[in-house]
Image 1 (cartoon, rainbow, N blue to C red):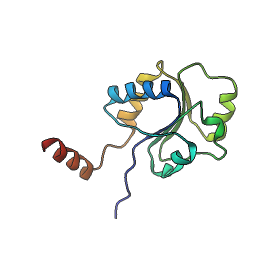
Image 2 (cartoon, rainbow, N blue to C red):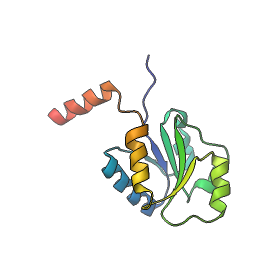
Image 3 (spheres, rainbow, N blue to C red):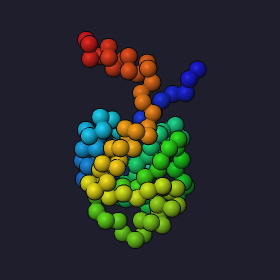
Image 4 (cartoon, rainbow, N blue to C red):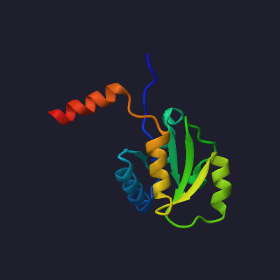
Length: 130
């Protein structure tokens, strides 16, 4: 049986960060899943191609997050100096500031992440045909 596919996830409670991430979704043509808390975001984390965690919740993470690709800490404002320590503990590869890094994130969503498996594409095609 093939491995189950999970979309990239954004773990944040920040309305401003979610708005910026929705703009990235529109640019990339890729939908993210959202979680309001760290425990909810940890579910199936190791199967996800990308984890984006907001600076509002990064301090609450005690154990490193791991996934199949990148772990990114995102903010809408220049991050406080404490964020760098939290990002290291989480295992983040990058700390980005949106909207400045919007094109960078869209590029990684489009280029580096796997495409939808064939059965998901067929399901979407059938849904749009109906």
